[in-house]
Each structure stands twice: as C-alpha cells, then as structure tokens.
Figure 1: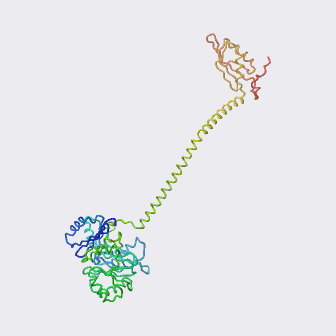
Figure 2: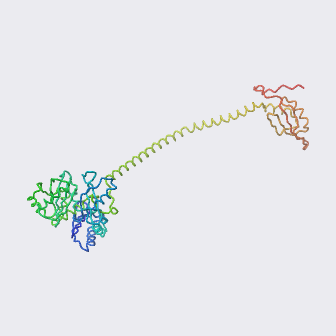
Figure 3: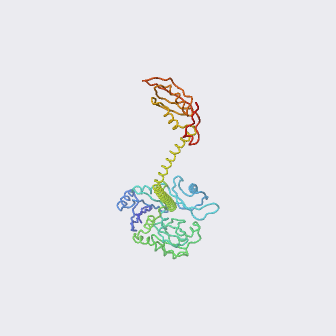
Length: 459
C-alpha cells in the first residue's frame, strides 16, 4: 500500500474510524456523536496524521434504502433518469431530496433489466460530507458500510451463494453474496438464531434465490450466534467468513470488544477506489482511472511511441541518404565544373561561328576590302571610320584633296557608285569627307573566292 487509507463509519450514536497505514499497520478509534464531534474528529485526524489523501465514508445500513428494482433496458445515458423515476415509488422521502446510485444485476426479463439501488436522504449525505470537510479532508466515497465487507474475503473459490450475518449492537446485518458480490442486504433487529434463520428464509425469494450454500457469522456476540444457529434449521454449515490473510492479520490488532464496528470501519478503509454504490455527488467525486481508461491511454501512448519511432527512423534514413548525396556531390563537383567550363567554351565558339556564318551569308568580305582600301588611299589621306553593310561601304576621314578619292575608289574591284554623302568641309589645310560606295558584285561562297579579289573592271 503506497499511502494510508482511512475509513469512517457513521453509526447512530458513534463514529468509528479505522486506518490502514503504509506497511499494513491498522489504527482504530471510536468517538461519540455530539456537537463537538467535527472539531474532535479533526483534531484526532491531524494528531494521527491521517486523512491527507481523503476519507472513505460508510453509512449504517438502516440509514440507506437498498433495493433491487426492474427498469426498462435502454442506453446507458438514459438509465439514470429511468432509475430515478422508478425510485420515487420506493423511497419514503421526496425525490428531489434523494441521493442515489445504482449498479446492474444479473437477471431480468420481458425487456426489463434488474438493478440494485442505494438511496439516502440528502441531509444524511450532506451531514456526512460536512463532517469530513470540517476536518479539511476530502471525501473519496460514501457507501453502505456493510457493502464493503466482501473486500476482506479471501480471493479464490467462494461459494456461489452465501449469507453473511454481521452483528453490531442492537442491529444485525444480513448480506446476500453471489461469488463475493452483493446482491441484497438487510438490517434487522438483533434476535436469536432461529428467528434470524426464519428471516433469512423469507429474504431468499427477494434475492431470487431458493437456497444458500454457506452462512457466515461475524461481529458482536459471535459465539451466541453460532450456538443459536446450531439449534436452528437453515440446513447449511455455520462458520466464520473466510477472510484473507491480510484482513485476518489486521483484525487481530483491532479491539475485540468493538469487533462489530471495527470490522465495518476496516472494510470501508480497504474498499475499492470506485465502489459500485457511491452516494458522493458527481461534482465531488475523485477522478479514478479505470482499467478501460488505462488500457486506452496505454494504447494511445504505445501508438504515439510507435509513430514517434517511425518518424525518427524515417528522419535518420533521410539524413543518412542526404549525407550520401552530399558526399557524392562533393566528389563530382570538379568534374561538373570542368563540364560546365567546356560547355561555356563550346557556346562561345558557337557564337563566333554564328557571327562568321552570318557575315558569309551576307556576302561581306571585310578583310580583303580593308586591305584594298588601304592600298588605294593616298599618303596624304587617312580614314577615321569605316562601316559596311549589305548595301555598301561608308568611309569618313580627311584628305588634302577629297575629290581625287572618288576615281581612286572607283578603281577598286569591290566598289562602284562612289559619291559624297555630305558636303566637303575644309579644316586646317585638310578636307573632311564622307563617301559612300556600293558593292561591285555579291560575295562568293568558296573560301578561295573570298580570299581572291574579283577581276579588274575594264576601262
């Protein structure tokens, strides 16, 4: 046990408190119910350092109405409203002042399901809550105290049907169990064995039984109960309840003179975290993770872990692949640069070839024309600009006598129709000219024809 558990049983005139500390060490004390009970209970819990993690509350059986009723089978969300409607015919107090809870029972027919209902007045539940809250403890559950007794039984093979008789003071509790689960309970005045046997026989049909396989006796005046039942007529073995090893060791440390109240308080303290019949309002109930929720959460965590592992594996594979690609790129980078340089050189050569082809296609032979032009120009003239196109040649420059240039250029095998395109202007003993000449003949396609000048024109 990781933390201490505290069980509190509210009786008619007393409050019994049992605690199970870490390591299984029990504590028990009983206090009279009076006006100072909340303060004294708070002082006891603080002094013993109990109740820090909550207190489980058990109510006397005569304070709670427990009954098996039939309700129509319907969806879980509508079952509570149907139980509340059916319950109004069975409780002696107003429906709006009722605190109840229910748990399904086996059986039922004709479209009806059987449920076990526990109901109490609102003031009873509210009083129990105020008593615990005054000690600054949190109520973990409010149940019928005797319904917690099966938690003390030894786990294993239990009789399919057993009646547990638990005596406590002036009242005797009859608990009807099917394999350790409560099917019905009653609170009757303490009486002799034969009277209790008759009471049990009358109660068997209410539980839907025809017989029981075992009768267990515990609580106050146990020897008298057993001796009375030997003179009774139930026809089954009378024995002590088969408590578990841990419960037996705890019971040995509790006071024998108050074993009736002590056993109930111990059972409430050791009860389930979520008992079947819990009268604590839903807003105050502690959240308890059931095995279904735990399994679902575990599956969600496992799925999330698998997804995360898959993402990490994919990321690692991608990083490894990228590292290999980077290494291969670095290895091929010099070769790629060499190929790119070769491609650039090829592109430049293609551009030069394209220029040459365009010049050849246009019939222009600039080098032979320039050579011939250089030979024809006189020594006192120089050329500042030469431009060629398909229509002809244009020359700009200066000469001592610009007019003599026309016959000279007319004698070129490349040119004809030489003329000034602008008036001749004289500056500093020189005449500035601009001449235009047309081509004598179209360019030849062969290389030899391009290099050889055209034949001289006849004069």
